[in-house]
Length: 563
Image (cartoon, rainbow, N blue to C red; front, side, top):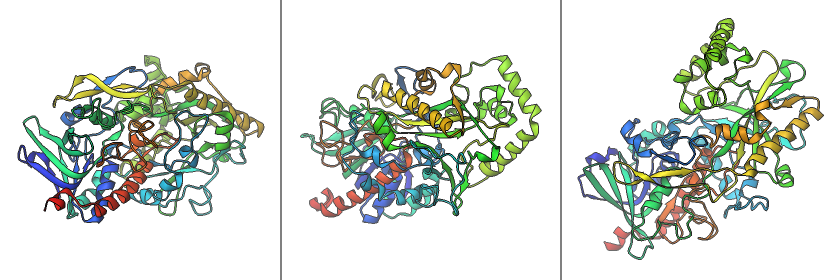
């Protein structure tokens, strides 16, 4: 059943066995996995089935340094489906090393093993509609995928790992019918949770306060509560709920909101590849099931350990779009159309080039002079992305010469001073907005710089090509700052730990000291890996659903105990 919270009579008490707060990929996966238990599942989503400016305004907040981090209402969507309503669909599992306690990275190590998560990746792949659970380029497509650089056999990098792409699947659209038809699942839209109400001794959550409108509020009681609200909203609600737990629920050791990580990412350098153009492949291969797959150049765990670096990957990329000297019509057409491109992509297109009349003019000339290529690109984009159910994942344009740039996507190491806190402003329900103070460190910069140098040396040693930096990239920190906190990857703000002194939640994602409160999503990840988080978010949701399934079948509910 799906209904609006506006239909709930004011001051009503709604009951359920399990209450899930947040209707993104974690919340929807949890609800449908837990439906198998036969228990009553209530899913509360602040947004509706379609985006709303009024609801989206609840995401507003402060940013300590706006040069490094986007406004808090960007990349986050209060709508059924959450972040999957705007994601690009990239699915990548974490690596075994990401779960290890690495002596060269402070605060690293998960209290669970890689194997405990890996066993749920196949199910996550299915939920995300990313095809078969196979991330080896030699096995992902019939006959194996084409090499990125023919003949390149690096010692310190692995070129056989791949990323697979979802449709991209909007969980709200894709699973709406299943949510509506499940007899024991109830979804309330436009239901904003404003407080967690703890028992007097603080050991459990008795109820949550919900606001539908300014004048309509009600409460929800449940045996188990799960916060699946994302890496920003989860700490906000925990910190706001401070009437019993001083300083906020789960915050006895001042860890809620700390260790806020995104990814260190951007475009860097120029790679001049030797030999014929067919020796290079920087596009996608199709798996037998139609899934788009792409190779990456990944820093091996042995290199990470020997050089004291975080995890990192590179992807071969076209020349920078914003620089008109590439002379390529399709790239200039994209630059000229930046106002019609989503915020997260447009930001990267123009972040390193100041606007000028001459820049726009040269891009216009490129688009006209190279108009046949521009027309072919636009036709392909219309057919393979705009109109296709499974969309072509990104812009792939072969440059006129073997000149490329590199995309990098690197782990941000845990930093307790990088944090989400409460700001001075309030939303329309009277709750304090968030304040984002994202910080990177020297080790984050060194991961990019040393990995780049290592790749440059290996390419040169094997006579594959020449990888160099532009004059404005010699200081790698300027490149890191150019894009700052990458996109919507909000990680670590309610981290998993082996005890309350090292984390907010335990190995089962239960908040320390609160018997019936769990957290789902990337806020629980102790480290960020090199990978986009969505696939692991869903895998962890499947894992949590199995744990909660055991809990609710073994422990009588409050309603059952009373009756």
